[in-house]
Length: 240
Ligand SMILES: C[S@@+](CC[C@H](N)C(=O)[O-])C[C@H]1O[C@@H](n2cnc3c(N)ncnc32)[C@H](O)[C@@H]1O
Picture (cartoon, rainbow, N blue to C red):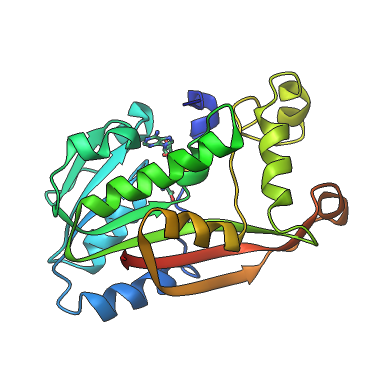
């Protein structure tokens, strides 16, 4: 698997689940865990800001933040109900026991599981979701925030174009200069329909889906990358 370096990871020392996105996941938690007593795993949870929000808003919850970046994990705020694990998502099944978690969150992690081929990267996402599914308790849920890159006419084309461009080592200096943080490593964005298919392949049934607002993007990016409807989406899943 290809990995980002520390300078690239520094861009992720922020909280992506802001006041606008928080209600999408909170509504699902409140509905399925009304007593607020759940054990969660935040996969690729980085600096732990999302875990901190969960712990603050649900005083009966406890959680684990798993991240492969030692640097991001080190910037976590200590909390007596929070455990930090510095490891890779590829080792989920070895690190944790079946049934150990009620809620497993993937907030913008899966598109970073990049291999040299597009299909190998998709396989890695399915493997990660399958492994997470095996760790769920009977009432377990998987929460997935991701960017949805639907093509203008050809559904999965923007993700494939972005993957091809950002994976290229040759184009790395040019793309870094244009602000593409993952240039030289790659990023594997999917369309909404592709996410649905990957979840189904992993044996995850979608209980609920919500869209955030549509992104406004410069027209030249839209044209060059064949972008249609692009936004953040949230999937709330259970075992099939
Ligand atoms: C875009 S950031 C998202 C961070 C956080 N989930 C959030 O929403 O603010 C992606 C995170 O995934 C982590 N990551 C990337 N590859 C990983 C892997 N193989 N195993 C575990 N974490 C990984 C990165 O270190 C980073 O913290």
